[in-house]
Length: 116
Image (cartoon, helix red, strand yellow):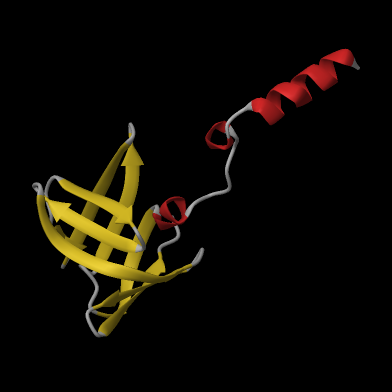
């Protein structure tokens, strides 16, 4: 019983940033997405994290369209760059397990998650 109280006390003393957190919107973005309508960055995109690096891959007409791609989510914005140059920026309107809605200027882009 003393061990339980010791662990509970130590956990209460931990900074909040060290405590486990629920999945973030960034985590929900990870996956493969297919353009359903609107101003999508490409027909099919993949947002991944590999060895701590956010990797962006995209395909247009079954061919890669971005090399050395990266992505970030900052202040509700999805930013995509290819070879270090920003190529796409959109406001994240909604992200669910099956749908990603972005606002690009005055238009919307709707992407659906691809099941692998």
